[in-house]
Image (cartoon, rainbow, N blue to C red):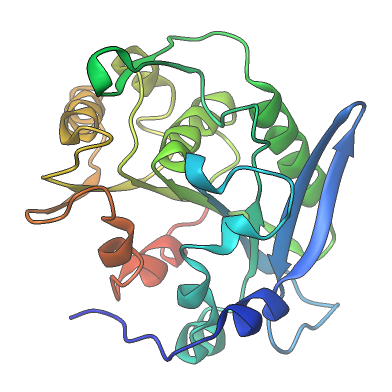
Length: 251
């Protein structure tokens, strides 16, 4: 069973998310933000951050809405799981995670860095998270993050850089250096998704992360779509239990 999404035009999706930006020194991180339908300023709400893939990088503050927004605009989801949802946009010349990509031979090879300094995009993202944690309407016990492809890699990286912030996270067709996993293994519940036929980010990256998580004592959820290539986010965002699962975890 998957969630059924009603047709929403680009204009409808674009119009539902307000525009914003996080500015720190010379860095600007554009983002789009969706507030609950009936926002009560006296209440606090869960915060969900969604990180896009490398193809949606830029500064138009629009491309990052390509995948995922329809889940959060679903009327049932909005009614039953009111939350503040943010889609930040990574600059074209940066990357969410610390990974070297070798394209020799026509295929991408991802070499995930152990430790290291955060990229400009990651630094700005962490600053944006800190800023929203200060907002009076954000429930600090229900902060969630997830992403696809480059955004999945960024999700795992920010978990090790801020392991005490997030109540749960999801990672779609991403990856990490397995030596980093112990930093967040027992602190953040994870649901990992990947297509078995992924020709861009090998399925083995998620497999290795899941194995390392289990070795570190964690119990991650792992969903493999046997016939999916790199677009496993289509199935992941349609999982009816994804949002209920996130909300079942609190700090």
